[in-house]
Length: 185
Image 1 (cartoon, helix red, strand yellow):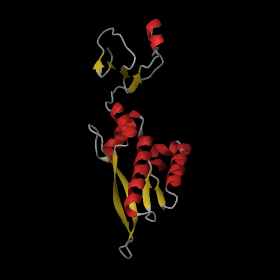
Image 2 (cartoon, helix red, strand yellow):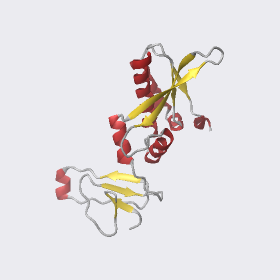
Image 3 (cartoon, rainbow, N blue to C red):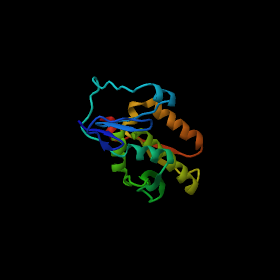
């Protein structure tokens, strides 16, 4: 009764949980997955005595996971212009959400991704999909300026792997990596 939810419904008394149920404890989401045999013969006990939980329930973790698996984002391209001659030097790749029930705007979408722990995955998806679509429309020799999320700087191995994968898929495309100012702070 202290902010626990089962399948998005508040728990107000003792309740039976089943395979596939979703439990929320504060900001933490747990999906109960078990083999059928274990469900028939055993009981599930959770020891939460050492778990420190935040006070807010974030809805949208399941939708965010779906957005990522379905790659439901749309790239937008902002021209990078040389002020000396007005020539377009390339395009900054910007992402927008395209999943029902989630924000389209990148700021709100990234905030939700941060709350549910998918900020790096969303950042990678914005980059990968943007370069793929951009190259298909603008050509191999077009320079693309791609962004990072500050959290990616905490996992440089993951960042380098995603960039290596991007480079392997688009070996001839010039790519400029923009490091978010939040990573410096």
